[in-house]
Image (cartoon, rainbow, N blue to C red; front, top):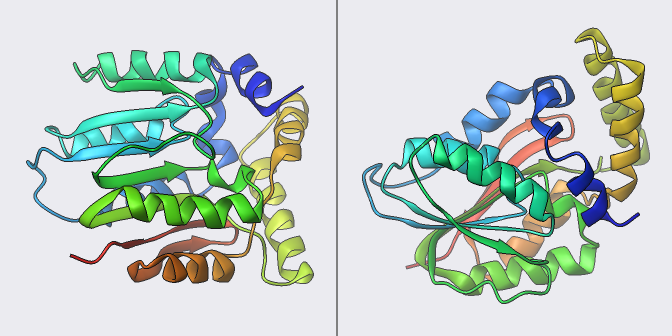
Length: 226
């Protein structure tokens, strides 16, 4: 089964366990919105890479009601859920079913965002994507990635994994849902936070930072200079 098929198959149930599978859900996503710069009434052009069900994008849309969104994902069924979510906000984003690791990103955008998606790419594809994101941003534009990272050492990575398992079990995850989560995690190809911050700097980003970190869950990014 490909990653596309795996996520299409769970599209309608994907969001049901988000607050369990992401034990730090509120702080994680709130930070990913709070770090966004500029006038909240601005008519921003926003690209969401690996938009999935539109969870993060809809949070940003609520914070920036005049923003126009382009949502890109491999899984068409996930994007159908995103359409439904945006209809509740009375908005109609542009929907593109594509592999953003290969597709032309277009632009220029004022903001490019991603949540829990880029960690599925190889390190080479991540590094190349960060350069392409930089090239697709308008001067002064910002990139924010809310994602998961590999521990800097094997011992730290084992700590991250054990902490996550203990947290989701404490929140009451069922054995079936846990097994399904582990199955999806077979597609993970995480990189360390330090490596990714370095790739952003190499691509040309300014103000590169990690604004939030809870074991493997991080919010990081940077800005294209004016």
